[in-house]
Image 1: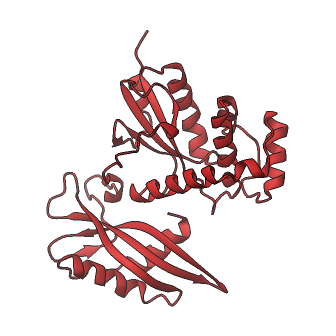
Image 2: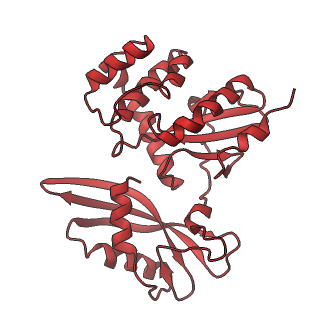
Length: 280
């Protein structure tokens, strides 16, 4: 979810603990909170899933699916996203912290991985029958991704029978708009077998706030020697794949990058892959 949406839901949902009952009460609670914002028109709200919270008794994480129209000035956008509420028998809140560890309980929640998460078109490096599987949601202009993902790509490239790396795009366009064009270039390059170009997107020197697609493509060509046209990066299959990536990130409640899953479990250390490499 974008920082704007995070602010929206935090302002709308955060409150002192309120009474709650069944699913209907939770849905009504959200509707009541969101309806206080005149910029929001609610299309639909539902409970998508109820998940246990590891190590915390008496509370469940409710995965809420929201469909709203958000008006800013003269512009109205329809937005669909997921968020989490924490519910006990009589209480409901949008924030829950483990007082012993200080850890935000939200980071402990993991919805079920989609059955097709390990799809062939998302396999960036490694053998699909590798001993271990890594899923990464990333943005090539995210500073934290630039510190983490290149080494992970290298590890998967050099150890294809230890690691299969499945890559999902999550360009944080509200923070660095140029990412949208770069991830499209990455898709074209991957299809053409130019994995060197895919990796170079993590080193390319470019203003992350740049929105001019033509200029971005000129910089890519100048910095990498790889030329691609606007028509190529806007092929329908790319739109479809990026749309799927956004949908999967929503379903898994992935809002930041890099988010990594190692053998099906969220890896908050971002270094689990290192233990997967067979010592030679």
